[in-house]
Image (cartoon, rainbow, N blue to C red; front, side, top):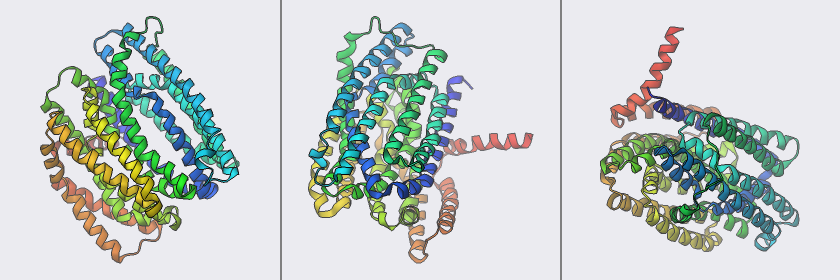
Amino acid sequence: MSKEKSQLKSGVVLSYLNLIIGNLVPFVYTPLMLSILGQAEYGLYTLAHTIVGYLSLLSFGMGSAVIRYITKYKATGEKKKMQQMFGLFTFLFSVLAFVVLILGVILSFNIQLFYGNTLSDAELSKMRILIILCTINSALTFVFTTYSSIVLVFEKYVFRQILNLFTTVLSPCANIIVLILGFSSIGMVLATTGLNVLGFVANIFYCSIVLKVKPEFRGMPFDELKSIFSFCFFVFIASVVDMLFWATDKVIIGATIGTVAVAVYNIGATFNSIVTSISTTISGVLTPRITNMVFKNATNKELTDLFIKVGRLQYIVVALVLSGFIVFGRQFINIWVGPDYAESYYVALLTLIPVAIPLIQNTGISIVTAQNKHRFRSIVYLIIAIVNAVSTYFIVGIMGIIGAAVCSAVSYIIGQGLIMNWYYWKKTGIDIPLFWKNIMKMSLAPVVMLCLGLAVTYFVSIDSWFMLFTSVFIFIILYIPILWFTGMNNYEKETVKSPLNIIIKKVKRK
């Protein structure tokens, strides 16, 4: 097996290990965090992160450009030009980091203009501190983002995932420690920043010592700025869209209802983040490879095959998680964080179900970005996102946080469902009808288990962790064989059996 394939397979395995741990740890620590912080301060903490998140838009989508342009020179073996491009992006991000710091400070001292009616004086004071600290964290991320991108360009997935695993485990531990010591939300931001700095240092060391790649500031290719900004503009619009969809809801809710409502909405949105991370694990690893395929003029059939292969793998996991959450989500939230967060279940459902479509098709995003055909997607998403934000503003006063979730759901179905499927099919050359035929053939297991699960939970009360875990275990045990015999192809079965066979052989040797 080649080193590249070994890195890819190990990277996927570590990605899922990181994913499992990353999704299990918060379920343990979130109730403790909420009990110490309380709903109001958790909402304040979430709101501060959301507000500063808007400053991340100042990256202007250059995160995708780093991988695309540096991969181009790596593919042609032009190391000098690659390092000069590395230097150019490092310089650009450093300038933007300085701008972020200035805007963050200005924003912190004017926060009362937006939240003076819903936050107390004490909350406004703490919000100012949180915004400044989050701004510093964001600026540092800007400065060192190119180093983590270089690791991806060289497809060093093992190092990347081990570093992610380190952060995944230590971050909640550090948060709990600072909370127990009485530092509240401010301590949590400081702990996160400290861990991020350690990650930045590790990336710099790996790039410089192991990969022997350093930014070259002499002879930086400023002549490529026009091309870079042209490429980045529509990626930037896509980033604006993401903020309008997921951040603006919280900002509007905080300004019109209050921080408690933000806390409840954010718990519901957490499940969306979890399922998204599950789906993007494989496609995220494949981004540099897809870019290489496009540069080497891969055919539409080759791209369609990859699109379907990855989409099927994503659907196996997404369908299991989504059907399981529909059946057990309400009971889980009640046991996990209590009845005060009951509305979070409906927020989660309204955002999870429609977002499942783009989650099993996010390889398409990498393809159109690599092909530089992402303009249409960005413009469509921007229009729909603006409509979503405006409609949310008016409907929140009538339907509360459920209204915000409804607006997001409708927008996702129209934009990322109907319109983008048409675009992938007609303009990108991906065989979308064939893709959906594959998905329909795989849908017997989730549909059967969804109906069976809802029927059982209608008559059986699940009000303890033991009952919940037992029910989920039975659900999975029944789900897997149905999917195995009715939905999975030979490649997918082999993907599951291969690591199991390796483990069995190692056990037998011992």
